[in-house]
Image (cartoon, rainbow, N blue to C red; front, side):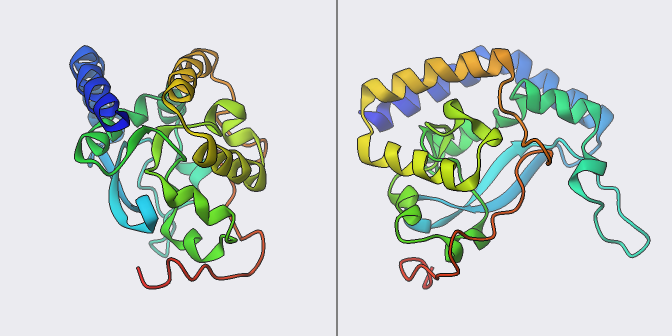
Amino acid sequence: MKRLFDLLLSILGLILFLPIISLTALLIRMKLGTPIIFKQQRPGLKGKPFILYKFRTMTDERDQNGELLPDHLRLTSFGKLLRKLSLDEFPQLFNVLKGDMSLIGPRPLLTEYLLLYTEEEAKRHNVRPGITGWAQINGRNAITWEEKFKLDVWYVENQSFILDIKILLLTIKKVITSDGISNHNHVTMPDFEGTTPKNNQNYTSM
């Protein structure tokens, strides 16, 4: 039922929001250049890697050594607007169609975090990652990593169709109010360095 729900809503979303998606892509091409789509490998269900799609929100500016400048220097006012309105998330509807993601679930984080999770935190990978989730409507990037992971695991252990509907409706409210977009001292979230320096054996072979 969850997969059918994902397919129906993602197809409906792509159809209904096609004009907005097309206009967003055009503006990104004009203001930030190419590529329009940001692609990055992320861990999915059971830690299996997949390619995440998002609209690009940063420039390619580099220092004299050819290294990318810090995020806060490459994130333009236009990029901030895309994030504020969550327009950068639209391409993930294609991830949902492919089966890499669900509409609702823990957000897919960086692959290098897999070895930093505790056994409890690693439970967040027992379901498909989502475009939005329980942590996103309960603080998003304004809470700590530990709080975020506790919320993710709570969702995994209590997921239901009714809960998914609740999260989806509350997400719309969060987008409208632009609540919790960034951490108080970072453009999104600071890097996760591990709750404890313990490898998770479930994912070391993936």
